[in-house]
Length: 446
Image (cartoon, rainbow, N blue to C red):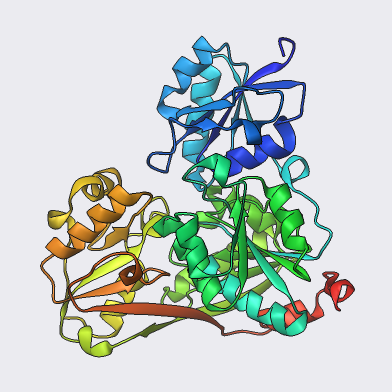
């Protein structure tokens, strides 16, 4: 491979592996000498295994810390660096690009033509412009409608392969026990469990062409459930994109969220019931400016709590979805919103009680408010989260996470779970759009 471009792929255990699999793995023009990893704790120091890297890479490919990128470029004589992860501000993208250029290499972003896989079935994708926009609730709503309109829906979720990559090529989830079998992290469970509760089959893993071909065997339509604000891995027949009026303007300032917006067939302005009206107007105007042909749907995110008695008048700890309030840059999430809505006396600040890796999370994400991010990328972090909850001086715990944390850890204090689903507040609704759009769905009716 001496005549090929020596290449590094910058990633976070997801898009990086996908880009390699579909474009670089069998491409003699490139010699991928390393992946770099960031965002997710503990995903570096591994090797992309030989059963995934293919015969051109008999020893696999090292996965190294992104902070070592200048050293890697120099020592491995790197000529090209490809950015392959998501939810970065434009400033952050260009800082990385400038670093690469200063080290002498070319810098590249990859688009749909080189990375999207074509399905044999209709594909509806649900993506977002930022992490924490409420994409999962939209995905669940779309899956309900597709079941009613089409039949068999299989959900394919954006990758989160944080464990042994060689064993995670293609994962199928139909029961809770499958999550235990694949040793899923909290972050994975948060995405899979709500779908399983609805009776949906979920696929995920590392090799997304293999995953697609397996999913097609038991589906009439594929629902792509995106991660962060990444582009779909599959060519969609209908592309739904979720925007967040709690962060107006972010839809035009984060990579690759703006690209999603500019490709959208349908844009869902979520959380209109809790966002400032002026913010909703700002977001709507931005959509019309860059994607005037898109259909706009406005939706409320309706919040329900198991037992209001454990919230009203109590000093509560709000535990939030981790990615939303960390790299998603939200100060707080649905747990804090629910606590206020249902009359909590006080939102207890957990920072002084944080231990181990949770304390490090607060140091890294200084924007966080009086909430506890449910970070659990491994058993150590899950234990640290459990200990932080136990140490926090509060009357009760409000679980604003998509999963019931009580299933995977001991919470001695009274705890209530927050549930939330979207409700469209404008016409047409998502189901009406799915019914009327020419997305080849009728081709798969059986």
